[in-house]
Amino acid sequence: MEKILSALAEQNRIKIIELLKTKPLTVGEIADKLQLRQPQASKHLKVLHDAGIVEVLPRANRRIYKLRPEPFQDLDAWLDSFKSIWEDRLDQLDDYLNELQKKERNNDD
Amino acid sequence: MEKILSALAEQNRIKIIELLKTKPLTVGEIADKLQLRQPQASKHLKVLHDAGIVEVLPRANRRIYKLRPEPFQDLDAWLDSFKSIWEDRLDQLDDYLNELQKKERNNDD
DNA sequence: CAGGAATATTCCGTCAAGTGAATATTTAAA
DNA sequence: TTTAAATATTCACTTGACGGAATATTCCTG
Image (cartoon, rainbow over all chains, first blue to last red; front, top):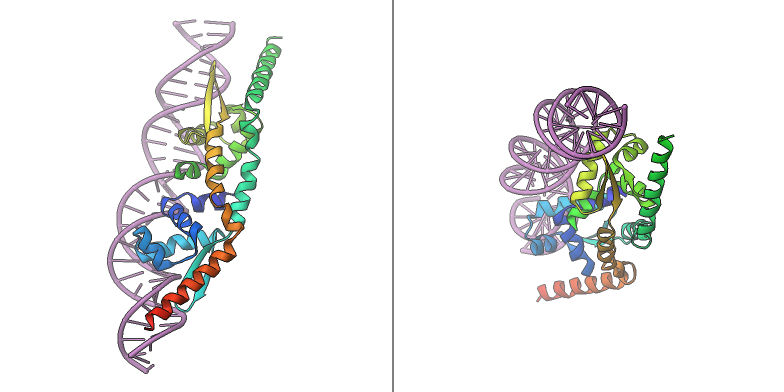
């Protein structure tokens, strides 16, 4: 999970994947649309590629980059495990405070 | 989105929020469970707090940290906007390749 | 009010990541 | 086979983030 999150935790790369959300694009097109120099675009795409977030389709001397669904599905599944916190978090806090008080009472013995 | 992702993109902080998923905890408890020194725990919690991922409840000289649901909801909503890629991405690629070929044919004129 | 527990902050050193510029690589085309 | 286009890689530089150690702060308790 850290690898995916790290790869996504950068402004330019966020913009890149939001671009690719619409459709696959070549390096040059990405650099153009985001006002990036070509080497920077390639570097960011390499980070995304190493994290498995994009894949490459060579086509002549172009490289078409497109999103891979897996990391997004992984993230989604991971996030699911946090969904409980916006359902029953008040109960959790109550439980915890009660527990704390119990400990403190025990210490008084 | 970058702020949230950056805050989450670190192993120790991932572990912290996974701990807090169960219930709120104090700094000392978090440091204990994760084998972190207290200052490091405090620092990571500060990063999470600055990103709005956790909130603090002072209770005497303890600080109880708990997850805030909002950033997770935000992330979830953001991820939703990518769901299409694992539904109709093949069509997208087809479209794109057709488009590319059309451009190339035009260049031949 | 002195002492101790819990937590936060600061300082320092190190290392990873980002940018820019230059260059290498690959492929198509003349 | 030389040239040009598209992309990747390397190098040098700078900055930000992390860890460790020490210290400051806050609050409770005797």
